Image (cartoon, rainbow, N blue to C red; front, side, top):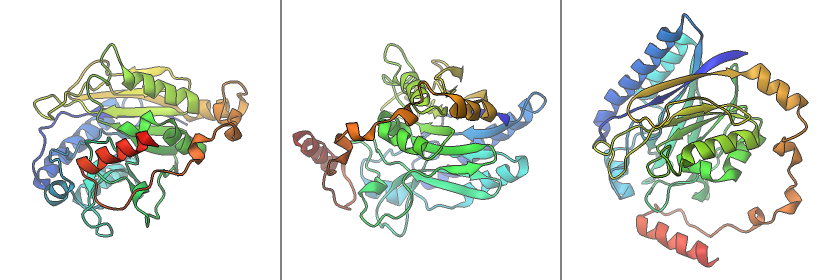
Length: 323
């Protein structure tokens, strides 16, 4: 009922084509394997969380270019490598995000992470709250015929696990939806840049991670991109990957350190389950008065299923402000 989780930061040059994904995948697999073996005399590292854009970064401003030059279908030969590691060491991997294409949705690109365990792919999460207006990935919620779970939670031998990607975490409803399904651990796959990352004085990264953990009584395992400006322009990526417990305590953190970094900390399932069972105070899920709030009942802004562009996203923002 007690094991360790690890967050892994990366600092790869931005790939220009999908042919470069294999090297990045192999490097992350090596970091995972070295972590498992390096800490084996001390404790078992069972859960690994990798950062957003660890395989590809959207260096092209049009969805068509991303789709044609970088995006790949899932599953693929890279997910097989992760699965092989999971089977070999009985571990679970929340993959770095893939820029994904899907024949069911021609031309669309999704920002996607997988939870993979010894049995194979356990869940697929496609980023719901894309970082508009600069991300021209498609949010699955905007597709009228989308019929897969938006916020999957998986019951595993190491706990009930959910995930959300980067900007999703600035929407409390998103993480609350995952927690409401019984999640005990919520992974954050992220590429959070300066000045909003782990760098003073804003430190949105740690502020949001800690707040979402305590308000939902979950562990947060958050991996942030550690790439330099040279590798992932036009931003620098401050890292700061961390693991936070269900009371908002930072158990381990990379601090204001970018570049490659591995951070480990314990996940105590017995403790969180006991607290969820006994606690009466500060249990905001149990105290929630849904009838007090009306904003989430409003009809959402009308959208279509067209492939997003920077201009259409800007128009959407303006229409939402008028509403």
